[in-house]
Length: 265
Length: 298
Image: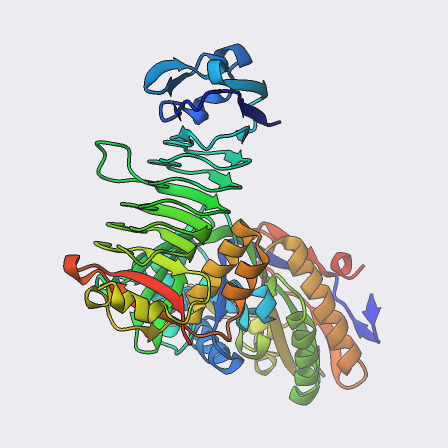
């Protein structure tokens, strides 16, 4: 049984669900769920004021529908279960997430999997799939877990990431992996210019020269990404082991051992 | 009871509960796979002195392995979880990590775990990379051909070790023929291994010895050269005995392998010098699993 949350807010109000604890939904009645705290334009309010709540949370499965493009902080601190969003979402998706799966059918804003304000580390478990595009600083300070974006991204992907995996269709080169200590950024779409563009953006000096990478772990990760993304283009790009992939390591500025993967010529 | 004119003794094989694990070993090609597997399973015939009974369970097609490369599944059995946890990382470190292009993965799930990369990762000297994919933790250790990928640990389960049957015949050629047919038939089955060289042993043992330091010694009742000197289980024309020892994931697996092996042996050498099939036991007092030949073959 799934709990359905339909956004019925009108007038372009910005909602913040960062204080909503999806893990605590299990075992609660619909009336109790409607009284859970959210913020409407910064003002403390209740979930039932802006969402039509139906179904049951017993299976830890949630579907959010309606226009959620102005809904921030979905899945903050999520530990288990699955949230599916039938559209786009605002910023701060899956902040400080610990486990479970968030699946966004549309786009997502800035700081996907990022840290809550005042926290040093960000997402540390679970998986986020965004089938559209994401804003800036996707996976900022990521510590563990996987973020898969089938579309493109804004600047600062994987900036200061500590570990974990970010796979993006076509990431913006600005600030890509800047300050990363460990972790993996995968550029999924074939783009012959990516090496040159890394140099143009001044990143290459902070990373090792590209070198061919081993297919063994790539296959393990590719299978999981294809399972998560369920996308034909992704399937062809990642599971074709005859294609040669390259790897950069860095960021040298912080003695980092992070890696950026991309498909070579 | 007879199969192809070979009498089957009304006796039983006595087997034991053992701690076991399953591994999946892959490499770029089958030659590297088998060379690494030969090293990993080497000196793994009997827990009496090897620490493990370990052998290849079956060859795996690329579609059956985690990384899409050719591989083998390996089963390992030990008398205690402590011994298993000592032997598996040691053998993996010296025989798989060292072999070009190889990778090793858990071959079984379960709450009880045996370490693989958990300890081997330190070989990476700080350059190793940990990745969690689909809830499984892998280690990527930089080595001279790229990187060695291994899973954090593998599952442990309670297996059955010591299932056996003995082939008794007139000469070594006929019993070898029977033995090889039996081992070939068992090799086709999943979930079982025959850990001895060639799948069989000539040194069937009894518990204890006249020498205090030995836990096992020769089973003189089945030694043809001692016939007439000690109480013997062999008749006048029975000059050769070889024993196939079988370890398996469950008692049913062991019973199935015994059945397949005995039928194959009798079919191959029933009229060519194989005189009798028997089984080894310790009076039924040591092992929990008793495989009565007539029941197994029914």
